[in-house]
Image 1 (cartoon, rainbow, N blue to C red):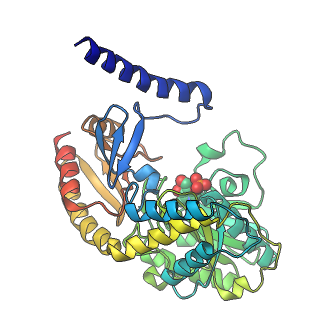
Image 2 (image 1 turned 90 degrees about the vertical axis):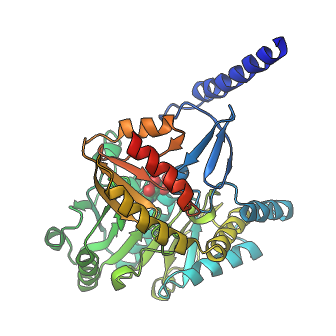
Length: 398
Ligand SMILES: Cc1ncc(COP(=O)(O)O)c(C=O)c1O
């Protein structure tokens, strides 16, 4: 008995310790859930107390193939045993395979990848390419869009709270209302280098434009000689039920930026371009130390293999359609937004936080957004119907 009590006290002490130590030694920039995650398996995570949570947040849309997918783990460990890193100064098999596979699952227009480390870096590079190749300075982005925390991406971010108090930001950035073709027409001209957008605004509350909006965007950019950049950091790599949003409504941007889920949690980002852009980019124009490192490349290759072999795109499409239908029937729900496994649930009460809290008490992790009324789901693409039912039952109950 005394031994058991000692074990319990020690475990409690260890848990407190993890949180205390993180809080003590990290800059306090994140509001965290009150538990420490020790391990994960598919759509489940386990805390250091041994509690199991259903993860419908996917570490913020990152854990695309589920937590610690055995094939991704094997690919990473084999690569780590062989070569963890060498820079872009040498050729490497893992990087070669990752680039080829990524380009092969992309729409035909995209023939080359430039690897980086994060979403914000992918966007910085895409905007840099657009400015360099057009010789123009102006970038148009959209109110409600989020593109990252470094100066260029932040300057394109249309959620003012992230830009507040951060100065100087870059000039030559303007924001248009999302899904408003006329407003865009007033801003887009021969001085515009690029229009950048999240095709579905995730952080802004999971908002998708009307099909006409994307078609008009392409036509207007073509007419003005401006580049169109899709920030697919969230929508890319299967989240919408297709590998990319690019191609939907027959609209192809000039560049696509990627990160988050493309390597199942190992940090890597990419900008995808076509030949007409690639040919203009010369040796030394772009660069990064870690981008396309062997370890991250191995994880990226394994991620694509798993999505293909486990038919995860089909899984996302079938389950999300059913989930959207059932969510719409829940009385507290006003609207269900998004596509595939990028889902925004808008509550009639106008406040999603109590729902998130109640779900957390039922051991289900979900996310909020910058729209207080919208709860966000960004689960692993491996999420199946039985777990969705657990979530739907809990949500109806709370
Ligand atoms: C659409 C979008 N673009 C860019 C970023 C920035 O990505 P990272 O945090 O990897 O720099 C994010 C991050 O949440 C994002 O959601």
